[in-house]
Each structure stands twice: as structure tokens, then as C-alpha cells.
Length: 226
Length: 195
Image (cartoon, rainbow over all chains, first blue to last red; front, side, top):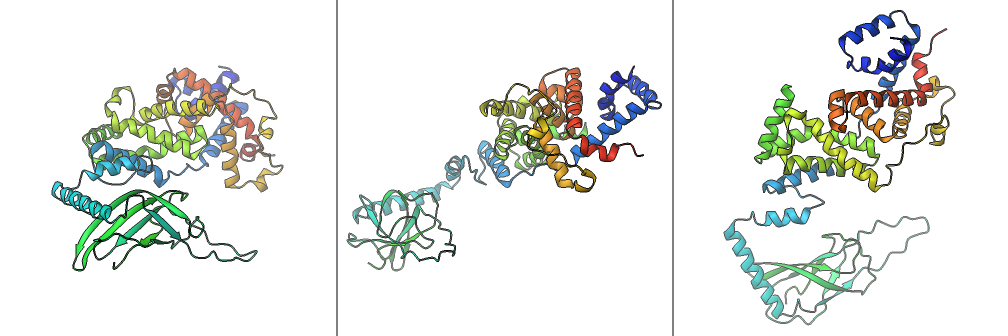
């Protein structure tokens, strides 16, 4: 083997991928050829340099996605994937024991019926009340606004009569909507529970025109102690 | 080989819904699959998508892995490779192999240091190596990544890329020559003959 042939096989020698006979032949050549020794050292230095590069770190987001996919495939409740979160939620919702599911369903239907009679759902438009916008100095940094979309509506003391007053939404974390803006309610998920004072309602409402989407940023107290 | 037997056992348990077994497999190979994808695509989000897709195959179709055809890592890398090439095509980054010129490295925005012995830091070296790696043609980058970072044997690389081991050797040789040429100032500090 000449130097050119040896050089083309040096990588395999370093990788311990050479045939034994070929490897011993190359080692004999390297024993007396300074040029090929230099080439071997160059490749060795390259290998070392490449190994100095750290492996990229896997994010926890990927871990969650993969494990959620596994749970989805095998019907386990658990972590929610960011990609297919609604599918996991939908699947997991059936993991609730049947009696509890029936009770929850009955309560939801009852609440929805009462709320409907009280005129709180159909065509409802909520008055958005936001605090006056603070004036910031030229160099002062405004606090990060956390826009909202989902609000919670709580009604205490029963709901036997129609709600004629305006509902107020207090944006605790700020709002991208101007004061007094109307927000159309597009979706309700109503839960209710009995209490000594009557029936409390907690309604999870999705408001349109609030961007970007951010859950649970606002709490709405509506019609308390009616 | 014991590792591969353990892989099979874990995979069988995972296929039955054993989450702990799957988690163990995932922890064992996620970095290497992700590292392969990341170095091929150079983008975290795409690399995550590819890794996710690779493990989805284990979740949904574990029977596709056949131990007699290679290790589980080889299988995962082969699955990942298909998705990597899809991403490359999608990104229109799967361009014809570039013509290598002496100025190519300089044009990429990576400058040689005139005094690398004094200037070079570990981080800089890593950045330069990554930049040089990214400039390699896809097939060469793939071979050298699978060898140096995923530590696959030539035979395993051949399985992943669907080629002969001689093809692997040739690609590795060309990749290393190109890398050694581009990284010469950094390699010479260790290998330059002393007076």
C-alpha cells in the first residue's frame, strides 16, 4: 500500500473498523512513514475537536409530547401534549368513573337549564371593564400585559330571576381590550354545586376578540347575592 | 448485545402499555436521535418534530422494529432519517452538493484566527466545528454525524442510509478531509510539527 491508499484508510483505522490484516499492514507502514503519521494525528485531532462539541439538550416539551403520545396510545391519563392536548383531554374525560360522570352531567344540564332561564347565556354580551390605563414615563417600562380570553362567571344565591344588570369583568392581569369594550361570549362550560345559601354557579366562558389566547387570566364575578 | 436484548424486552413491555419501560427506552435514545436530527437540520423545532415522529413509530408500530436487522438505535436513526430528508426537502435545503472552494469557509462568515493558539476558546472551537459540519454536503454530514456523535458502526450507518459499508467509508473519508481542511488552523495547534 502506498501513502495515498493508507491515508484513505486512516479514518477506518481510527474508528477500529479496519480488517485485522489491513490494520496490521497500516501500522507497519505508519511505523516508518512520518507523513502518514502526521495525517493520522491530524485526523485524531479532528476527532477530538468534534467531540468537544456538546450534544444539544432535549427540551422538556419534547419529553411531554412523546410521553403524552404514549399515554394516548395506551389509554392512560397523564400529561397533556401541547400538540394533541385536546385529544388527551377528550380521552381522559372518559376515565372519570361512570357514577361521577353521570352526576357531573346532571349538574351541568341542570345548571345550563337554570342559567338559560335566567337569560345568562343566550345572546349574552359581557361588559368589559378594565382599569384606567396607567401613564408610563418615557423610559419607564410598562409591565407585560397578559391578554386574556377565558373568564369565569360566578353566580351565588340561586338564579331564580333574570339578570338585568350589567356584568363586570375585572381584568386582573390587564387586558388588550379598551375600557368598556364588548366581548362576545362564544362558549360556556358550566359547573355548579349546592351550598347552604343556595346554588352557586361557576361558568367558564370563552370570550372572542381577546388575543392572544390565554386561559384563566380574568375572573368575573357576576350577579353575586342576587 | 445485552443492551439490545434489554431493548427488545423493554420494547415488548412498552407495546403492552408499560409506561416505565417505554420511558426507559426513550431516555436511553432520545439524546442520540435528537442529536442526529439537530445536527442534520440545525433547528431545534424541526429536530424535536423528527425525534417525536421517530418515537411515535415505536409507540404505534413497535412491530416494525426487527432486531435481526440491527440495533434499536439504528432503527430509530433510520426512521428519523426519513423525516429529516422530508424536512430538508420541505425547507428546500436539500440543495445539490455545493462546490467546495477554498473561500467557502470564509464566505460562511467564519473567520480564521491569525493566532489560534492564543485566541481559541472551547466554545469557539465548538462553534467552528458546528459551522464546518453544517457546510458539508448532506450525505457526508449524515455519515460523519452518525459516526462521531451517534457512535454507530460502519455497518449500522450503512443500514441507516441503505448503502454499502464502502459507501460509508468513502463518505466519511471525504467528510473528514473537508472538515480537516476547514478546521486546519485549529487542528494545527495540536499537530503542527514542533521546531
